[in-house]
Image (cartoon, rainbow, N blue to C red; front, top):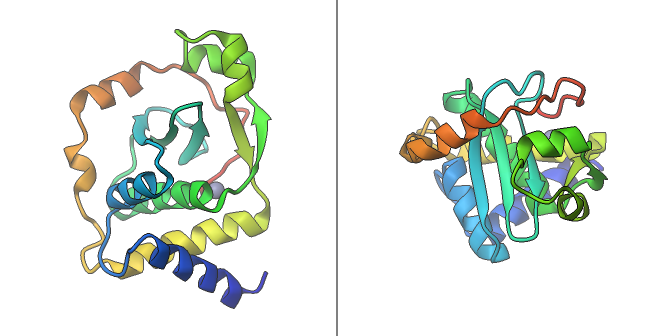
Length: 175
Ligand SMILES: [Zn+2]
């Protein structure tokens, strides 16, 4: 896909979401969640290894995990990138390894999780589209280092810190 086409698709998505000015990644998540009528959670996670962020979908919600060491523009970009994958329906499902699932969601029935929870593998074109979208969102923001994420509840961060999954073997997503 030519870059011009990619940019047009991203611009259309922003327009569909009613976004035409400074918008934080958290606000983007809220807008996307309303449009899809499906909750999106943003969860800080320690030790994501080479990955900056990723998302997983279950029956009732989508959850974007991001490395809790990220701050400012980089953090905004990583979240916007993952939200673009969600919005565009990128990737194909690949079932997570059972040990990863057990570590991430120790309270869930593994059999059920394996049916409903999958990670995504992306093509280079999809990665580029997500990058273009995230860049366009940040360009809209006069003050892109919006601190919307600082309003995230402390218990959300604590819960995320309890997760002990290892992702070392997984391919890098956001660069
Ligand atoms: Zn990606």
